[in-house]
Image 1 (cartoon, rainbow, N blue to C red):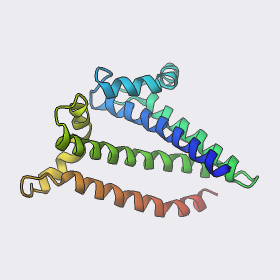
Image 2 (cartoon, one colour; image 1 turned 120 degrees about the vertical axis):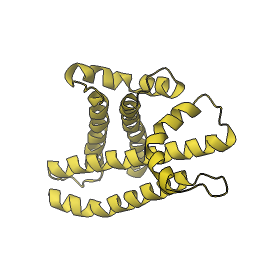
Image 3 (cartoon, rainbow, N blue to C red; image 1 turned 60 degrees about the vertical axis):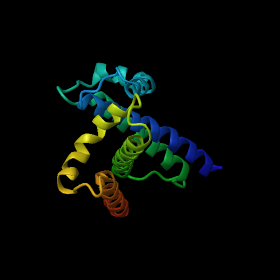
Image 4 (tube, helix red, strand yellow; image 1 turned 135 degrees about the vertical axis):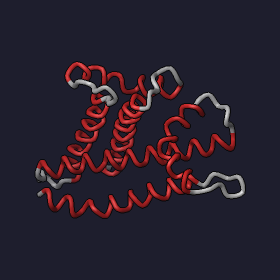
Length: 186
């Protein structure tokens, strides 16, 4: 029963936190809510980000309220995780903060992977889809440096594949660091 409850909570929490991070990133690259992706992201995060804007000042290029919103969701999720699986004892606050930060970074990397996969599929299936320019604008800053290094092979752009492999390596390294981080935070 606990596993099913955790699966539901983690799925909903990670999607909300990732949407907050996507909102911050879209603001960073200059994509507002005038596109289908932006409208969706604002619609599902506005209830959390709008009140935070009164407390958390935004920078010129950084939407701190959205980032703090994503972190708060991951922090609440880490507290719920400890409550469900902690065995009645509460770990050091540093461990909970590190777990929340770890999840936020992990979800950010998975978001990047999903965006790159979506952009690659759209480029082959329907390059004129209404969301294609938005997805291309979101992935361009990550793919452009790789495109300068990796040439086209038979007219096929392999930069999405290279980026996904790099992100998977980062995820693997991050996952291997978690036990050491948690032991350090105790």
